[in-house]
Image (tube, rainbow, N blue to C red; front, top):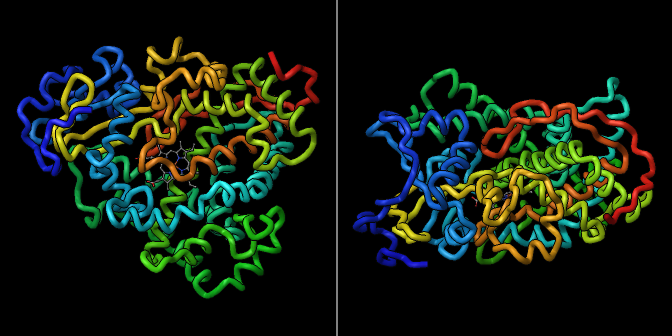
Length: 495
Ligand code: HEM
């Protein structure tokens, strides 16, 4: 990496920074605004194909024009996220809007605030503690599978079903037995707020949030409702562990033991967050606690839902890989409920999941603001630039992924993985701001997929599932599959 700026990070005017970076011409007045609005992921992908690994895209009318510097190579992504992370901050419009709506939690905070939060939260995400959530995840998956027995026409939309499952799972680890009270409110309010954040985050200009427009009012009402339910539960936890313990112990499928985590008496994540403290960092006050909870709901439910949805959709299109995954599950688990230790015993299923996350990364685009002019590859990104890195594009980079659109779990054998740069595949981001929920998400996905595949066979009804970039990747049409009770497989689980 070469930095072409003084090290204090305030240089905005380095000669030549940003010049010569190739990119699409776009429309004379609007640049690529309409392309980005109608299909941002396709626009980024075409930009890489036509212009290479560092591309400048302009969008918006003169005077309000945004310039996006898009970094598509694994080395460039590594530089922005990891080796030069201090030069790329979460100060862009998108993160500002997320912060305004969902608060200053672990995903959105920066500097001292962030370091303090991470020190308080990190101990709650040790592998051992997260492994304790396995039982609660299995219980939620079981109830989804049981409900499918009633699907009259034998067709389920795996997009809706996995959204429901992932929301229940993250709400259960956060709130324990209060999952019932929260899941419905979140399912109702989140789409209103995320749409609002997106509209504002990607508009050339926005009106103040307090103006009484219908859009502002709708978003404010949804936020009020969401804050209300969080604050109520937080207040109950603050009153002491007894209320929590009484409720949690009576719930079927709740956790177990002191490292058990979700659902175990007094051990849901909210209770642990409320109790987290250190002599240097103090503890979270009520509004900080609410910010953390909202950020975990935001970061932790649609993301895992997307991975699960596309793993099932892709398997429904590829019967051979589906049979092989089911055979592995059957051989390893038999009839028993999966547990955390099974993750490493199900390598093929994990490969399937990783390949699904390659093709459909739940965070398809990650944004930053450059604080100093920085050389990336052959060009220099100027200070103040909006920088985009895009797992959606890098995960399809033809230099690392031959025949990139083909579904092929063999790309994730240990040998194949060892032959690629670290950031050719980075669905969980990387560097100091990498996803704290990575292990939880992998655990949830593998357990859920194993139980689902053991119970049902899938055949695609919708062979194409359209997607768009929301705050996370989202389906914009149904992902229906015909399901049939699975026979005990007689296919071998090795090729
Ligand atoms: C497939 C599932 C998931 C994917 C693809 C994913 C992806 C990501 C990515 C790319 C980032 C970095 C964002 C950036 O650098 O701007 C991130 C951060 C984060 N994720 Fe996840 N995530 C997933 C699941 C989860 C879950 C289940 C949770 C919580 C239980 C979670 C909580 C967080 C938090 C709190 C951060 C901020 C971490 C920090 O800055 O220290 N994520 N995630």
